[in-house]
Length: 178
Image 1 (cartoon, one colour):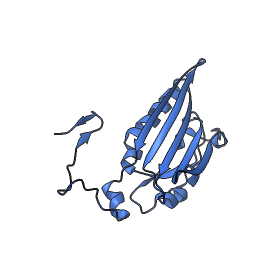
Image 2 (cartoon, rainbow, N blue to C red):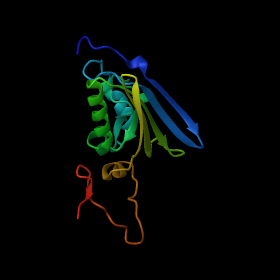
Image 3 (spheres, helix red, strand yellow):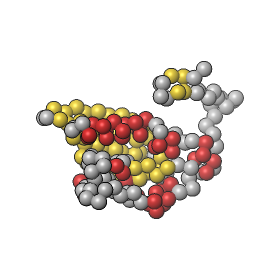
Image 4 (spheres, rainbow, N blue to C red):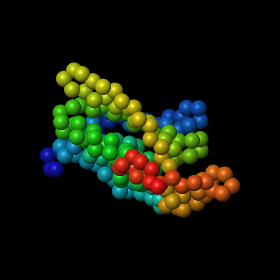
């Protein structure tokens, strides 16, 4: 959109260490999808996750006008990034913005000591309209996929001597598949 507003400056990005873990955080009020300039950087995405079997997932989605640089990217399970519950949450935020609500988000990726790939993402947000607000929090796991395990030469997780049981789940229906 040629006349889109550039709202990159309304977001804050920080990285810090605590108890040996690395925290990468982004926060700010979400811009209005389809009305803000977007800033995707394929070179930054390649630098963060190229060849790893992961996506370079945005902490704050591109559609909300946040930076497309490495400060707003982390290695993320590609399925969760493109089709999963985190994508669903971003879609909900976009709907809320279009319905006239203000949405403030704080997204924090947490990595284990010595690792750059986060194992979890803590998301807190506020939905505000007409002076009323509600606060929410969700924690997402960032498990490896077969593709990321292969690309990063990580052995499959084995439970017990027989390698454990695979549980098949239909996430749309939110139920186990027999």
